[in-house]
Structure formats: structure tokens, C-alpha cells
Image (cartoon, rainbow, N blue to C red; front, side, top):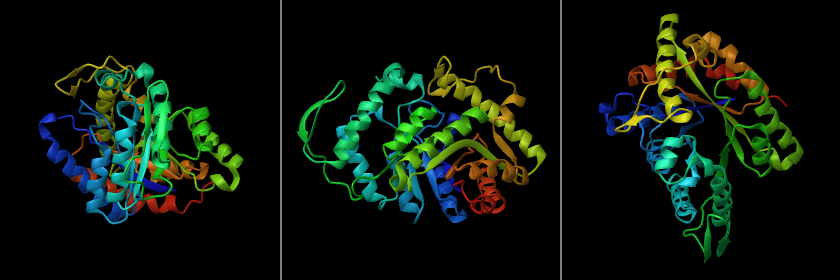
Length: 344
């Protein structure tokens, strides 16, 4: 099982500034390459200080300029917010400028607050995503494409330049429900998923859906992979674990506000709201621990068939502390995971 570092761009203190925020992310990406991570993932969110990155493709190009072989995965580009006729050209350009290291992860969007303010209500996001994905694939893979659908109607056109990676850049779909994972796998997409709260039954069902769909495809599905995103942070002591769990609790008091909550945001700052889940319950659903325990917990993922685990580890800690945790993981955990063969 490989590892991928999530450049999650969370900054609870908005006075920290965007320049320092993105400089930190580039430094983390360079560290990830040096430490043996397979790649980095780049989120897309707007208008808020949680997971803030208006253009993951721009960041992918920047990181490509600072690294040599790191895979660059968008996690995820929100299709309902874009016009696919423009976005297809941007994807092709980014694929060229990253020398083919781009993996285009796409999704429907998650935060009702930003979706509503950008004119793509969350209630319509699934339908918009489904059609947008079909349009994007048609534009990337063919020429003189026309469309007559619910959200897109246009005469024949050809996006230029044509893709460098043939027939199109590698694509990955973000989906949580097992039937959706199976359907996306059968269409030939890699999968990004997460059990969010870490519920064991859902985690196993997600993996099973991917594996069963691959098996049905035979050789055509052999290359497809599934990535699992979790909050994972390798601590240096028990006291450090307690500190990071508290940081995670504070982070989720903001995340929940815009994910499932009322979306209370002041000047771009997502407000921390009281949580019904206790800090002890939250800790059980995260992987924040020292290296020895982490090896045991993540080995279950590798043995079950997860190809790559995405470490979401930015919980507002100082940058030097973040880099130290990345190195602890790479030194004391990752070699064990890479030595575990995936389930057949």
C-alpha cells in the first residue's frame, strides 16, 4: 500500500495569510517526494478557511515545478461549479505542464454553503455532476463534440490543444456509497473514497464493491485502484497524541459547520460550533497515534486491498511540527505498509 499526502490547506488563524499557507503546502509536497510518498492530493474549496484552494490545477502545476516524479491528484475538482468546455482545456493544459503527472480526481461537491453561493445548489449537484462528467469525457476524448442535455446545450466544437496523455488524462471519481463505487469502477475510473467517521462496516463494503467490480472486468480492470482518505497523524508521544486529538476536535467543529451544519461563516472564517460527538468518540474514528499502533491499524487497510491511503493531517499545527510528523510516518510506518501485499 502506498501513501499520499493531502495538502489540506486549513488555517484557523486567517491572519496567517494565503502566501504563507501555500508556501507551506509546496514545502510539504517537496518533503513528500523526498520521503517516499507516491503523491499528493489537492482539494478544491472556495470562500472559507477550511480546505481552501480555489484552483487545484494551478497548485498541481506549481508543485510539478518544484518536484520531479510526485503524482498530483486533485481531491477533488468540483465539476458542478465549472463549465466543462472551459475546464476541459484547463485540464489538458495542466496535464501538459505537469508532464503527465496529473490524476484528475472529480466530485460533486460537499459543502452546501459554498455551492449555494456559487450558483450550484447542493440539491442539484448529483445531476449536474453526472452530466458534467459525461460532457468532460466527451470533450477530452473526442473532437467536434456537440451536446443536448439538461445543463449543457452546444454546437459541435473541439477543445484545443488535444490531450498529451492519450486518450485522456487519468481520471478518479470521489464516491462514498458502495453501489456508486462499483458503478464508477465499471466505467474504468479509479476511486477516491472515505468512511468519514470510520465506521468499519462501511469501510469494508466500500472496498468490497471496488474489488468485485474489478473482478467482473477481468484484465480490463486490473490497473484500477482505490484510495482511502483518513485523518492520519503520527505522533511522537502520548501527550502529543492528546494534543493532536484536541486539534482534530477543534477542526471538526468547523468542518461540520459547513459539511452538515448551518454554514455560519464570517468574513471567510468558518465558525466553530458545539459538537454532539464527544472527543473520545471522535478519537476512535481517527488514526492519531504513535507509530507502533499506527502500523497495526493501517495494516488492516493494506490487507483489505486499499492501494493507497491519503493522509489528511493538517489540523492547524505549526509547519515544523507537520513536517516532523510526515518524516515519522515515512520512517516508522510506511515501510511496513509497503511490505504488505494487497488482498487478491
